[in-house]
Length: 166
Image 1 (tube, one colour):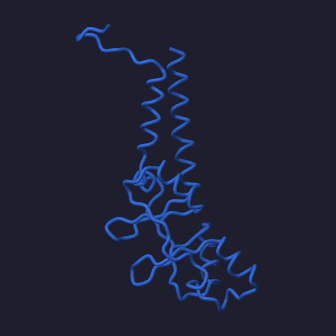
Image 2 (cartoon, helix red, strand yellow):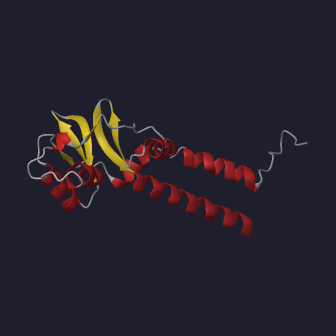
């Protein structure tokens, strides 16, 4: 029994639970603060070839499709492979709108990394545009999410090693 003057000691399991809760609370806004809010985008009427060139130039796997300042879709290298290559279509004459994913799944800056990982897994998507007050403010990729989780887990491991070492 602990007295009012003496706080209970928490064991390593309690520390682990607290650290896990902290990982779960890592939010999209934290990722965007680290990686920046650069948005690579293209118009839906642009030829797919322009989209592929822009992705190659920026070394990214997807572009947001923006029309009149609003998010209308997303186009990825996977869409190119399935919508152009496998169907024998011309990327120079096919507009982005014909192969893009319209109505993409989006997240907000307050959403947790855990929530985003579940969305990517359950919905089988790799890119999540970030929307705040009807404005597109960024995009997080599955790679960004995995990197954040690995970083948080590495910190947890270091903390546990320090705890064990005393």
